[in-house]
Image (tube, rainbow, N blue to C red; front, top):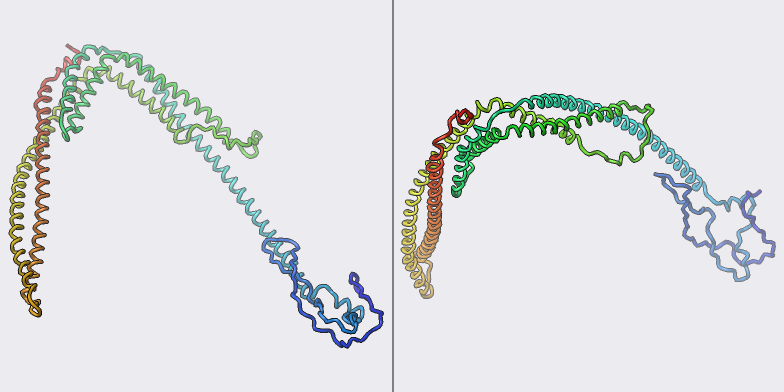
Length: 486
């Protein structure tokens, strides 16, 4: 009985002719051709090469029979059961390898699927936790934002109430200030003239010292007082207009804060189960914001500071109108005294510096004299070393003409060579010291020139501060005239 699917072997019924061959010739071994079989691909799956069965797959290469024995190359007649075994397609090793391949492929698929499932579960858990944390963080941020809005609302409301009160108080302030304003012109012209004269200082003395600071403060104070006394009524009107601008800014900011608080409270109360939530695709890419938390807080803070500044100006105007007549004289006298004290201190400082510069100039002149004498002595010393050097070099030159063995490196030769080197080194040292002394002399001369220039500058400064400025500042208007009583 034969297996189904196998090729039937045809029988040979012709007469047999002997050819003298008792056995089949040795078959030549051909290279085994392997084919790759990949049933499917999985990650981490190792494949084995499927190859043709090696069992009975050798082709014999027999020589033709000389006596027409071509039919003798056919295999001998074998029983049908054995014939199917001889022509089977795979060996047991092929079968085992195929099974192992299938098992490993299944295991790889299962492991890969298990890892993918585990990773998917962890991914879902991580994303769920991240989404929950982000939503909780957003709710906390909204709560903090509502707290910030409430804080600034209270600050804006408090400042608005104080500003409204101040605006009402400004309506009742008026004073008579024209008489005292004319008396301020005299000390104001003196202070300005001192500033103009001090601009004529030279070089380093053109410094922004305490005298100049006090003069500037005095000029500013006198101008400020004069302007207040002349145009206080107009300034009150301007100040009230500025107060109203600050009031409108506070009201607008407070109204915006109320609207933002209502919207943020609505957003804070939204939950995943709320009915009014919906998709708004692309809304995250639309940035309609016009500020950041820093600029947002700075905007309200600037409004409050502006309002505080306006209230401070209003308070100063009211206090100035109420107490200007009593305090103006004291302020100007105090500033006048401070400026005079600064003048005296500055004059003393300049005088001390001038005296020190004169002392340094005298010492510098002495050092210049000493340096010039040192240069003369060094030049003489250098000239005095030239003759001994000539003698030593001449001796060496003469001794170099000794004949034959007499040209000996004896003690005189050694001493002469040493003498030449020593004198040459001495000359180099003296010349170097001469150059250094000459450089020092140049520095001293430059220092002398600078000291003389500085002395001229200090003399000019003393003339301006002591002789011209202080001469103008000997008198000041009396208190009754400053307060407008006369």
